[in-house]
Every structure is written in structure tokens, then in C-alpha cells.
Length: 250
Length: 293
Ligand SMILES: Nc1ncnc2c1ncn2[C@@H]1O[C@H](COP(=O)(O)OP(=O)(O)OP(=O)(O)O)[C@@H](O)[C@H]1O
Ligand SMILES: [Mg+2]
Image 1 (tube, each protein chain N blue to C red):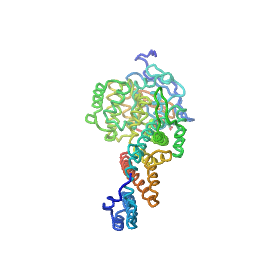
Image 2 (image 1 turned 90 degrees about the vertical axis):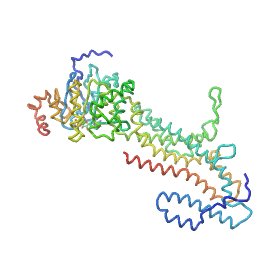
Image 3 (image 1 turned 120 degrees about the horizontal axis):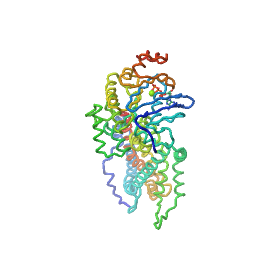
Image 4 (image 1 turned 135 degrees about the horizontal axis):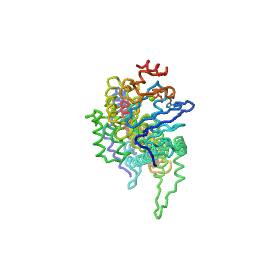
């Protein structure tokens, strides 16, 4: 497959995406571009389709209409190798979803070893580095059940990073955590963003979005109501729906 | 296989009925003791019978002596032949092994993404889960040839092996259901995160989902093993020298009606002694895994 994508073009390009679950249209024409190294934050009320949008990007969910291109490649082309796409796009979930029968280290190592077929020693060295990076040194041999929510979520981030993805998707990764541990996870994400990782974040942490986001999107009932850089978005949102949402949450 | 009239077994201490029973009943209210009691009651009944025999006295050997005489045959089969209770156990092992492997495959068919595979697997599962085991046994006996030629080699299918296949079929269907249920009980988040890490469906099943299912599957699996073992006497009907057949043979050669209850009682005891620990162990594992989840 030939792709003419160059890093100066959007790494993720979403155009007029529609998605329905049965009779319910969850996404009603969403368009959005992400450039390489950018951090995009998506905010919006519950049920507005934020998770669905993220899931469309790595083809966990098929779309009904529109186009999603990742590095120039159409995601919803039936001929596309979904596994190849998912090697480039990491995803972290609200509920961590670590593999409970594997230790933290094994969780991080599994995909590179079994999916990418990389040599075990090399992967282990990388996995240990990643666990150190998310500040979980000493927890390598702990099972997910023995870790706190924040620790589990950081293992999940390390697990995604072990695939060396080009883009990371974060779906409300701090929503299930208590305020104390939220910070640990946000620190990890901030470091990633500072290193230049392309991130698409769905979050309810407005302060965090404002601090690290390059661009904020506000979704409501399946459409993007308003978007802009954080400085203008948070201070001079024009749409009444955005203002209502922000006043509720801030 | 005739034994002399002297009965060494009767000299061995057997609890006196009255004393043993009252002492035992006092502590027989915990479930475990109740289980042991069941076995003891069988022993006591036998001892009682033997006592009656002794007092009636006479030329014929006592009941316990007769039971003892037949025990080697019923446990291990005729000399230089494999059979008896040992054959029941062998058949149970083999049928369980075959049923487990094929049941795993059938269970994966039940959750296939490919609709025709799913439908066929569903039909097979339902058919074998809802058929009487005895009828299945007859079917397999009649359908499979007694031997088969593959290339130049003739492979014989002895009756006991056909019977094993007959018993493996319903086990397969029930194991398939266990597999399907266990896979469905794993949260969808596990599938999603594996998918997003670029695991293929097969890899996800094999490396992530099934390993998590094993613990949940062990107790019902063991339960089916006990059920299967208790069903193995069915194979006596299709002419296999299992413990049931040999018990009947022994009874036929003795021609004594007072032996009927003790002989079948002994057979029941063999199965009880084998299956009861499995049942206890199953319950223990069930409890252990329930706490962990
Ligand atoms: N697999 C599915 N099948 C049917 N309906 C679905 C499915 N996934 C999501 N939905 C519906 O789509 C709508 C949008 O869901 P989505 O999870 O994308 O919202 P969200 O913006 O992420 O909300 P939240 O902030 O609560 O996570 C909801 O009404 C939800 O019920
Ligand atoms: Mg969501």
C-alpha cells in the first residue's frame, strides 16, 4: 500500500464522520484534524459520542459515512489491515483493562513479543524502562489486582507505549480515579506530551486540558459545537451550549 | 476362583452394629461426616447381613467372604484381562480427555465470528446435550465399525473404545457450553484492550481470554467428570467387562438372592469412595475461586 503522507499533513484527519448504533445516530458529521506532536483534548457531556469517536480512529468501531485517515491511510477501507493500524495507534481506557493473569511487566511485554514478534530480551529491557518512566519501579512483578487504580492506569499507559505508537488515544483515563491518584497519571501524560507524542485525550479535567492541550474540541450530541486553542476556548467560548457546560464543570 | 470355607475376613474387627451406629450418629450432622456416614451405613448393612449369615450358619461361605472373593474380579477384571472398576476409571479418563479437547473446539465454534460455524456448533451442542446417554451409546456402537483400514493398517475398535466415544459426546457438548459461558463472562474491556494492542482474535482468545477462563471452568469441569464416572456403568449394557457387568456375572454364578443387595452395595461403595472426594474438592475449588473473583 502506498501512502503519500508526510509529517506536515495531519496525522489524523477526520472528515464528516457519521456513526449510528441501530437507530441512534451517535456521531452526526464530525470533522477534526490532528497534527503530528499535537495534543488534542475533546470535552463534552456524557453520551455526546466522545468515546465512540476515539474508537473509530483505531477501527474498534466501524463508521457509517465519512472518512478517517491515519497517516494518510483510510481507516475504514475494508481492505485495510486493522492490525497494522493498531500498531501505530495506542489506546488507554477509563477502566485500565489490564490483563489480570499477568504481572505488570508481562502486561507491558505481551503485545511487543506476541504481536510484533520482537526478541524477548530486548522487549523486557524496554518494558523495564517504561515501567520506570511511569514511576512504578519495583512493581514489575505485581499483578494488577495488587496495584491501585492510578498504578494500574500507568501500567496501561506503559503497555500502550511498548508498541511504540505514533499516536496515543486516552479515553477519560482519570475518570475512575480518586483525586489523589489523578495527579500521578496526569504527570505521566504531560511528560509524554512534552516529549512530542501525538495525543488525543477525552477528559473531564478542564485544568489539565487547558494546560497541555494545543486545541480543545467541545462535542455535544454527536457534533463538534466549538473548538479552538485553550486560551480563547476557555475564556471566550461563544456557543451557549459550551458556556453552559463550562460553567457547570469549572 | 473358588475360595476355601475359612473366612479370614470375618475375624477382622467390624464395628458392632448397635455401638457403632449410635456413636456415629451423634457426630453425623456436619455435611462431611454425613458423607462418611453414608459409606459407613453401607458397611454396617453388609456387616449385619454377614452376621445373620453366620448365625444361620451352614455349609455356604458368609456374605463378606463372598464379597471379598469377588472383589479382585470386580475391581480389576478377570486375570490377564483388563476390566472391572479399573476399566470404568480408564473409560472415564479417556472419555473426559476426548470430551474436553473436542468440547474446547466446539465451544470456540459457539463463539465464532463466522455465523455458519456458530450455527453448526450450536446444533451439535444442543443435540448432544439433550440426548439420553444410553441412546447415544447404542448409536455409536451401531454406527462405528469394529475395525477400520487406514492405508494398509487395520485399526480395531474394541467395544470399550466405542463406548468411550459414546460417553465423550455428551461430555463434549457440556464442556462446549462451559467454555462458551466462561468466555462470555470475561469483561468486554479485555477484548477491547487486546484489540487495540493489535492482537488478532485468535491470539486474544488463546493468550488473554482462555487463560482467564481456566479457573472458572475447573469446578464445572470436575463436576462433569464425576457425573461421567458415575455414568460409566452404562457401558455394561453394550457388552463391556466393566465393574457392573462383572458384578452381574458374579451374582449369576453365585445364584444367591441374599447376595444381591450386598454385591450392588459394594459396587455403589466403590463409586462413592472414588467420586465423593472429587465432589468435595470441587466444592472447595468453587469456594476458593468465588472469593478471588
Ligand atoms: N456498542 C454500542 N452499542 C449501542 N450503543 C452504543 C454503543 N456504544 C455507545 N453507544 C451509545 O452511543 C452514545 C455515545 O456513547 P459514547 O460512549 O461515545 O459517549 P461519551 O461521550 O464517551 O460519554 P461518556 O462521557 O459517558 O463516556 C451513548 O448514547 C451510548 O449509549
Ligand atoms: Mg466515554
